[in-house]
Length: 387
Image (tube, rainbow, N blue to C red; front, side):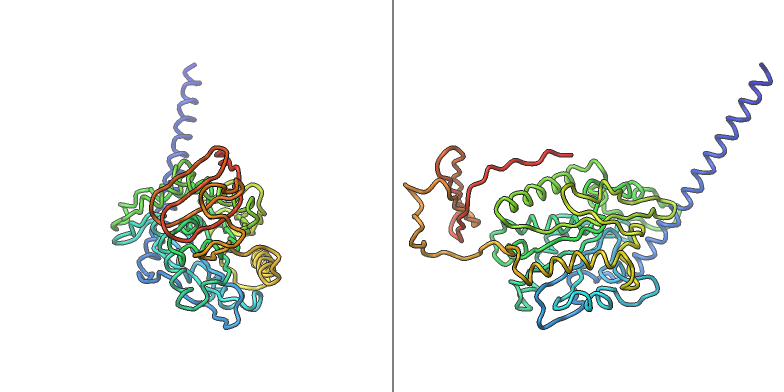
């Protein structure tokens, strides 16, 4: 019995040492990667935000806008290994002709010395919406369809920007929603990402001041309520648009390879949406958007989707926008609001004022004050159940 106890104690001690050594080694790896992130953040110019034109085209028929993710950069996120220039500038124009190519930057560093941006996802989305609308107005192309290519957190920013645009009382802001043709989600965590937990690891041993944007990190956790809200509202919007005859194209790309020492940042289950095309890219989370050659399979797969959407725009095979016609006078065949209004039409007004909604049988009036009014069929609509 004494011999058995001795062997048991030795085995237990050996296992404890192995576990402790493994945890220490993992902590070293985490600290190395965190320190690398701090150095990258500190060396990145603070003013690289807003929209930047990567490729101009006078005869463009579509705009393609790239939006980076957490700890990303509007240039380096899209730059291949050993390259100096983003591939949307060097590789994409020859594949997607008659297109303007732009990139959008925002402070999405979770760790930065000395201070991280405290903007919430909604703030970043509002800024994206405002900057796109302003740039398109200044360029005189506010009625041109456009496509988002969004990496990781950038996909959530794009979702929220479109939702903010949809019922906006300002026409120039609402046009962003109306002219959105499609979104290519590049490993966007529609249902959270464990990287949020990694980013919370203390780095006091580095001797650096850590400033964490806790709002952005919380959104990436798998149980965040705001992330669920964005997803539900986005799904509701997509479903309602389908019922009205309009489509926003969606394709989800997901990473095939794990990050060294950390594994996959966004799982396939989190990066994909039921009912939409899902395409893999043989790279890890960071490198899946860093193409160095037009021969790379991942690049070809993305270009294939963008080309398909652009062809739809050129041929007019899809309804591109919702009518924005302002009606100061009613059409001859349109009855004025009041008695006798057909039960097949609803009037919506997006300006401020009172609201009178009748949800039973008969007519429906949504009147929020003076402004543009839109007619359309009334649809019975059900919110999708959370997954």
